[in-house]
Length: 165
Image (cartoon, rainbow, N blue to C red; front, top):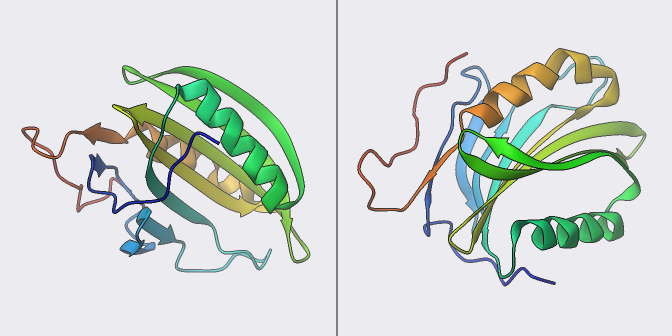
C-alpha cells in the first residue's frame, strides 16, 4: 500500500467551487478537507455528495490510484470499475475513475479524481444514485475542473468561499 496514516490536510491548500445550495462541512475528519451534500434528497433516496480527501502518498500517481482501486474493491459491495484513466486537467496529471457499488438497496455511481502533488494525494469523490447520474454528472465534472492545489504559503492560496452555481 502506498498510502500512509492520515494527517491533517494542511500540507497543501485545496480550493474548489461547490454548489451553493449544498450543505458543506470543512474538515469533518482529519483526512477530509471538505464534505458537501445536496440539500434535497432525490426520488432515488440517495443524497448526492462530494468529498475531498487529503493524505500523504509514497510512490507515483498510477501506483497510488491502483492501490486505491484495490482498497475500494475490498471495502464496497459489488464494486464495478467502469472507467479508469490518467490525463491532464488544468496543467496537472490526474487519475480518474468511474465506478459503481451498492449501498443498501441503492446502485451508487461514483466519479473520482486524484491529484498527487509533492507527495501529497488529493482525491475528489462524487457519489450519486445511478438513476440520478445524468442529472449530476456534468456538475461533478465542473467541480473537478475548479480544483486548485497549492503549497500552503503560495500567493493567492485560499479555499474558495463562493460557489459558481
